[in-house]
Image (tube, rainbow, N blue to C red; front, side):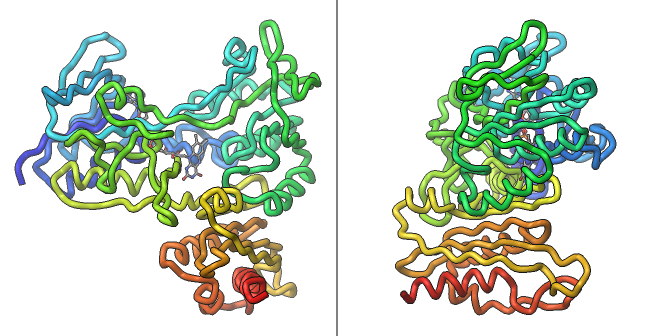
Length: 450
Ligand SMILES: Cc1cc2nc3c(=O)[nH]c(=O)nc-3n(C[C@H](O)[C@H](O)[C@H](O)COP(=O)(O)OP(=O)(O)OC[C@H]3O[C@@H](n4cnc5c(N)ncnc54)[C@H](O)[C@@H]3O)c2cc1C
């Protein structure tokens, strides 16, 4: 293979694996990686757990990568500012010296991730870092930990994974936490209200207050945050965490002429944009759902990793495709695990499906075995064919493993009977004779027969 020049913009999950894969596919490839950070990589998914105190130091989430040993050029503290697809050069600026560098490429991979979205709430931008924070990197997560030391009340805006994991982390330090969510229930884009109820009950028991279908209208304070106004009512607050979603970092791609989609950069299955030789991967791209092959967004480390493999392979001259994401995820909030895959009822109906569901609660082990935990599992299927299109689970243990099985069933085009009849291993120390997942499928099958 010829010595392809590959430039990768962004040394995060997708950029790193793209680089590694490209080197494997084409050991002669000349790879340059550009990132604006001053260190190589960090595990964002671990941030809430450092804030909680489960992991001691933020430094444990920061990884240094032996890229130079792999014969790659690493340009840290450099921001890529343009991609000239006509002359095939990327321009990057050294953040410290403002020096401009042009780097020629045969292929470029845009792996620029996303940034936290802060809604235009009066006071939110003005009081940023003076009580208002986001959670996206070790620096801002550490700011939250430091600020939390002398406060007693916090409001978290958004009941998605980042919001709730952060809420639980802060509450663990005896801070009174209220979560405000605009939509009707926790994880509104991933799970259904009935599954959310189980989680919400547990959160309330742990002392976290929830305000659902509620809007933060104002953040107030002079030097520091002192209150927020929610649905017309003022709530005292010393700190506000904005966990109101993220947006793709796609300006660089758009300026280069890459076609934008609804929520991220458009690519084909090879993760190539509309411009030959420009690939994109991770949180900055829009993907498809493998269920109906329609546009879908999945901003997860797992998705970024797989997309990075495809982008890196193709950029280096190999061939690999990525066929979309079910957004299979798990989140641990205090003592609860919540997981989901595929469509929830809202998205299934919006996609035109008539949905049949089966839901079962049970134990993860026999009730006489120590450590048996309650779990609730739900499957969603196309009512016309029985084909599985989604699943959710919530409990103190085992939610991820059930949802992973449902994810496999969706990918394998299985119907309810297939999953119902699947054999699961049993030993009282780890499982039940008849798993709640099988029970959920059984209930859905009964409904289909009616
Ligand atoms: C608090 C938190 C918890 C999370 N928990 C989970 C979880 O449990 N499970 C899960 O699957 N996902 C989780 N995620 C999401 C996961 O971290 C992301 O999906 C993943 O990091 C995306 O990888 P990426 O390669 O697209 O982007 P990133 O890893 O964010 O990397 C993008 C990189 O691009 C760089 N960059 C951007 N623009 C430029 C430019 N112009 N020039 C140079 N460099 C640039 C940035 O500095 C950054 O390093 C979590 C995220 C957060 C914030």
